Amino acid sequence: MRHRDQTDGRGNRPVRVMSAPVVETHSLAKTYGLSPVLREVELRLMPGAGAFVIGGNGAGKSTLLRILAGLEAPSDGYALIFGQDTRKLAARYRRRIGVMAHQSFLYPNLTARENLQFYGELYSLADPRASAELWLERVGLADVADSRVRTFSRGMEQRLSAARAMLPEPALLLLDEPFASLDHDGVDIIASLIRGAIEHGASVIATAHAIPEIEGVDFAAYEISRGRLQPHLHKEEVRRGGRIRSLLGR
Image (cartoon, rainbow, N blue to C red; front, side, top):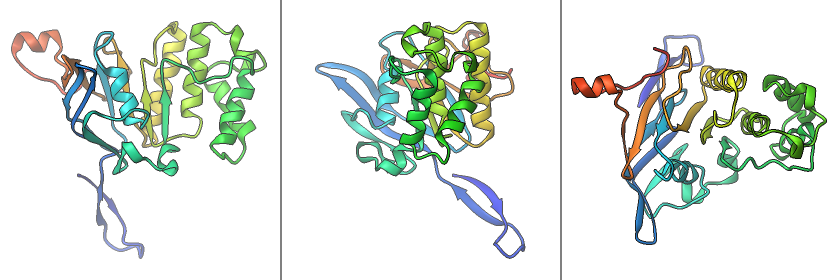
């Protein structure tokens, strides 16, 4: 466990406080029929840390995120989020997780503003309308706030989906290919939001087909190969027979 220093409440010398992992899996496995998708996955993520998981289509990246979000049960082993088994996450813990999936979970007949305001009310935010306006600005969609989502391009919908996931400022973000379908400006916006979430203490797990670069952020890098999660090896490290923990921000 990682330690951090705090005062004892009376202004005296620092007290050592242990931080528990936000995400922890043990021998996690998932099988569909006779086809194993995930095998004995071991993953540990501390508060304020980030990890990218890469792999091709069908590698198991989305399945891993669905299990961590409590949307799907593992076939074997288990996953803990905030110390709680994902198979029985209480509502108060689910509210602390922001999920960005291939499905946007947006309502196409509502406007961008109405979508975010609806989710703000769902999350019991103090001022859902103000929060919606803030996030529309952050993802560069303020000019189309009153347009219905059904008229959006895939990239615009992806930006709004990111805003929906980050709206309640969750302690854990699970982002499934957050840069998919985005142009250069969109990639910069989402990368900036991920960096900001990390800086404010959130933990982030994101999937991708290849390791993206987010300046100033040190992410652990993993890949799923034949259902097993392992540290990602850069081709230069493979040639040297070495291992690296992170490729981002370098």
